[in-house]
Image 1 (cartoon, rainbow, N blue to C red):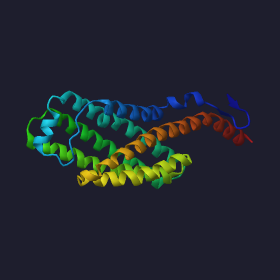
Image 2: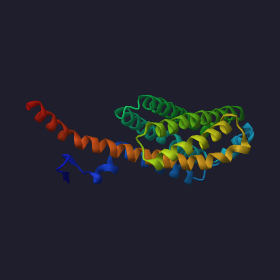
Image 3: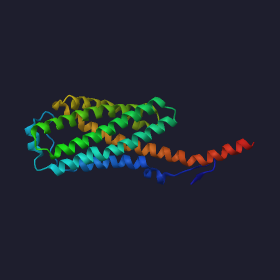
Image 4: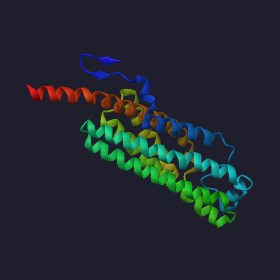
Length: 236
């Protein structure tokens, strides 16, 4: 459908099919599939012996869970962050764009590193190695959460997201910062904070992916009309 006053085309049926939109949806679906697996989750303060005992007989499930909650989501996180940064830059929110790009890229890289360490952890039988790897994965989770807090704040400050999603980004920043500190310092008593932070994160990444994807599609559809107007004005 074409708006004859502006020359833009309405393309709502394509909005969810953009790369950023698909990546945002896939991010949440991958996490949900990973959490649905019956894989053990030792305490943050578990000893090497406790870790190996918990993981024994569940190696395949542990490896699959790391793939679904760290490996695959890293790609979705990178795609949504890049799309967000581009949209923010087009809106002249340069600082927010760079912050979102850097924070998103760092979080995606950390997530990939966690996936690699988790794959090794799933196959180790040495308590000492298991303890070292498990601590590293959890502390990296804390660092990743803090970078995601920056991403949420940058997205909210960019001004390119709808109000409800900006509020979600701000709430995410607060919740995931507290959770990140708990994991970085291995504070088992505060590990429960990760649950609400994760819910907010999934909502934020999926919503942002769909929103910036739709914005990109709309802008792309409007470009031909703008070019025609420019040519007409030049001839006048």
